[in-house]
Image (tube, rainbow, N blue to C red; front, side, top):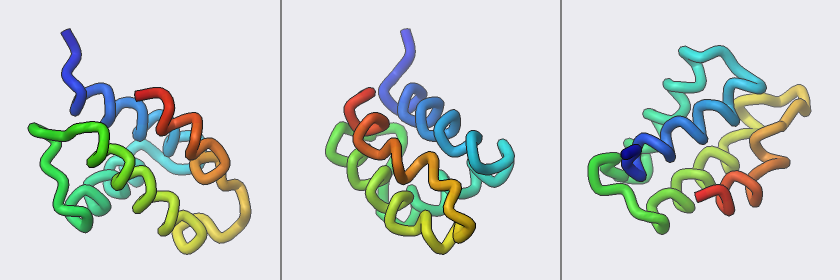
Length: 81
């Protein structure tokens, strides 16, 4: 059975890969996980929402050209959990 942390990571990585490479998507997730002090081993739905919000808040600086698939899908990504 897939844990919450595995499904969160996979969902975020897949959403970010629409705009970025696999390596950069992983880096974005890890950087924001550390910034929000989230432990993936004990990630809950509140942590997940905080992580999605942190990534979306940084998204305009990360992807200034306007192809903001992640930002536009924020509610869909949050509701997927």
